[in-house]
Image (cartoon, rainbow, N blue to C red):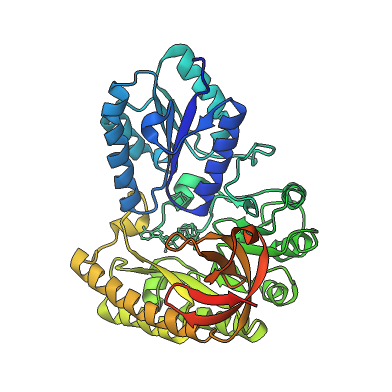
Length: 441
Ligand code: SAH
Ligand code: SF4
Ligand code: F3S
C-alpha cells in the first residue's frame, strides 16, 4: 500500500469504552494509520463493543453483517471486533460462527497488543483471536488520540468487584485494578499542559479507588491531589456506587473548588426487596439518607441516576416504590433502562421474569415522571447566572453555542465560535426538559 491506510472505529457502551477507543486511535496513529468517518472507505474497521444489554449487541451483528458485501468487493479490508462482547466465551463462539468475514477478535485487557495483532494478520492472512481473561497491572504509557481539545476522560481504575446480580460488567472487565496515584497525577498534569480544562475520572465504582493499592490513599485523597493541578478548572467523576460513598468524600465534594456540583448516584430501584435481590448492598432508606447528607453539604448539587425497570420478580408495588423514590429525590435527570437478561448472571436464572409488555409500560411511566421533574429542576435555574464550558456550536442552530454547567446541564446561548473551549458566565432565561437557554453576561 502506498497511501496511508485508513481506519474506521465504531464505539458502543460506556465512557470506559469511549476512552479505550481513544487509546486504540492513538495506537493506530502511531502505526501510521489515518482515519475516516465512512466504514466503506476504510482499510481497517473496528467495532468496540458493549454487552451490558441485548440492544447494543444486536446492533453489532447488524452493522458487521452489512459490511460483508463491502468487504467482498474490497479484499484487503480487515474487520475487527473488540471490547466487551468477545470477552464472553459463548458470545465469542457465536460471533466466530456467524461473522466469518471478521478477521480479528481481541478483548478489553489486551488493547495494547493491537499493532502486533494487525501485523500478524497482514503477515499470515489468518484470522486472529486473542482474548485475555484477566487484566493484571494496568498498562501505562499508551498513546491516546483524544476527542476534545479542552476536556478529557481519565480512567483511574479498571474492572468491578460488585457483582450486581443483573450485570455482566464484572465478567467482561475483570477485578478492580486501580492505577497508581503518581501515574494519574502525571497524566492530569500533562493534560493541563496541553490546555485541557475539565477532566472526568472514570471507573465502574470510583469510590473504591485505591483499595487494591498498597498506599493509604483513597478516592477523596486523590480528588484533593488533583484539585491542586494548575490549569485544570473542573473535575468530574463517574460512577459512584451508593454503598461506598464516605463522609470524607462528601466533605471533599463541598470543599474542593474544582470538583463539580454533580453526583451520578445510580439507585437502580426503589424497592428494598428488589435492591436486595440485585445485590446492591444498600436499602432505600440508606440511599435516601445519603442523598440528604449530600444535599446538606452541597445544597445546589445536581443528582443523576441510572434506574432499571422489570428486574425479575418486580411487582407493581415494587415499581411504585421506584416511582415514589424518584419523586422524593427529584433527580436532575436519569438514564432509564429495561432489564435485559445477561447470560451467566444470577438474575437471568431468577424466576418470575417480567413480561415485555409490562416492562415497556413501566418505563414509559418512569420516563414521563422523570421528564416532569427534570423540567421542574431546570425551571428553578431561570434567572440564575451559571458558569458554562463552551463545547461547540449547536447542531440545530449554528448561531447558538452549546456548553455544560458545573452541574452537567446543557446550555444554549448566542455567541461566536472563538469562545469554544472557554469558560463563560451565562444568565439563564428559559428552561426545557433537557437543556437551558440563556445569554452571556
Ligand atoms: N458501574 C456503574 C454502571 C455500569 S452499567 C454502576 O454501578 O452504576 C450502566 C447501567 O446499565 C447500570 O447502572 C444499570 O442501570 C444498567 N444495566 C446494567 N446491567 C443491565 C441489564 N442487565 N439490564 C438493563 N440494564 C442494565
Ligand atoms: Fe455492574 Fe454493579 Fe459493577 Fe456497576 S457496580 S458495573 S452495575 S456490577
Ligand atoms: Fe458496556 Fe463494557 Fe461499558 S459492557 S457498559 S462497554 S464496561
